[in-house]
Length: 134
Picture 1 (cartoon, helix red, strand yellow):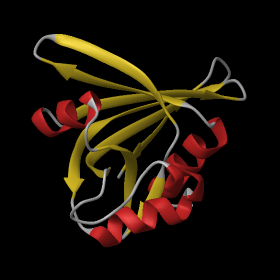
Picture 2 (cartoon, one colour):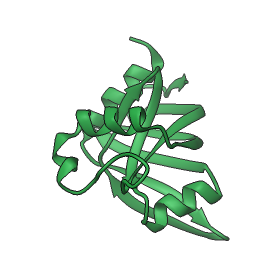
Picture 3 (cartoon, rainbow, N blue to C red):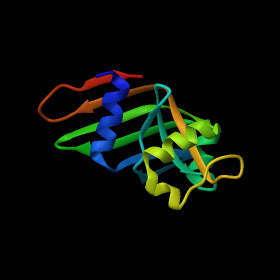
Picture 4 (cartoon, rainbow, N blue to C red):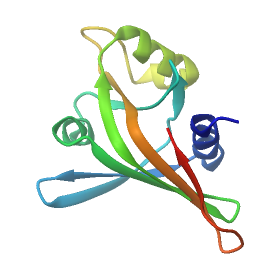
């Protein structure tokens, strides 16, 4: 399994992960639940009007943390907003329940971001960290 697939599967298995962004010198952490591979990049999704969207546009350096079955993952990297409707549609197709709240295209309210230059570590109390880059 490729590193990006391993990371995406861990996030999906965990169900909820926590995304950290910054605004000025203040960190912000909130629960997220979307993770999708499109064009061999790991994508996450939020709403265009949300503070988190504006924070990631202003400073793409983010971290994610999640736990699943006694292991935890930490992902550190930079996210880039992808305004293409194809990327937005790929995410909403992977999470059809989101279509009740989000739309795509020039007048849509969804925002998708992909990771660039990311490093993930999967750790537990019973094994050495597994380091993955993607």
